[in-house]
Amino acid sequence: MELLLLPFRWIYRGLVWFANSPRTLIASYLLMIVVAGVIYGQVENRSPADSVWWAVVTASTVGYGDISPTSWQGRTLAALLISTMVLLVIPLITAHFASRLIVDDDAFEHDEQEELKRDVRRMRALLEELAARQGIELPELEPLRPAEPGRAVWERSRRRRPPQW
Image 1 (cartoon, rainbow, N blue to C red):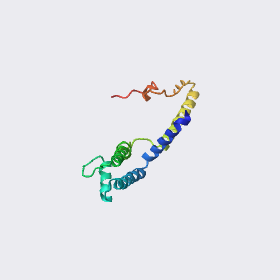
Image 2: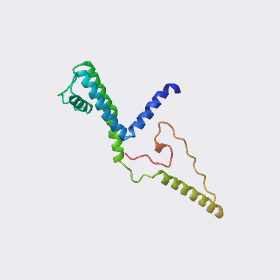
Image 3: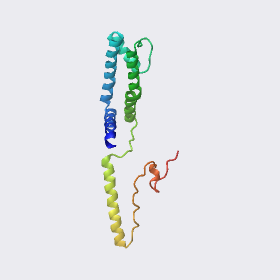
């Protein structure tokens, strides 16, 4: 089974790499426009300028109708170009830029999280030492339960509250 899933993992990793690289996204967009334009020009006997114009209009799904394929090869190329742009390239570009615009300034950086964890461990140690000096027995910490598939994060622990929708 692992062997059957291997190609899908490679594809997924490639898409993740592709989606997280704005240069690659823009370069692939431009490359697809040029390649589709060249192929279209050969198949439909059009000038390079008309072919690139057709590729841009088709890839953006505007479809002015001033230039359109007449052969089955040109129509197949148009279908592939539209599908690839609409289902993959344009959503990835949009998602990338949207993720850059939506930034949580209050989010902790990794170093800050590690510092907070060290501080909590130190406070726990100091609290245990103080409790031992005073002869107070601290209650046991509730062990963390592993996440169960299909359950929301707030259901994993009784200490967290569900989101208010």
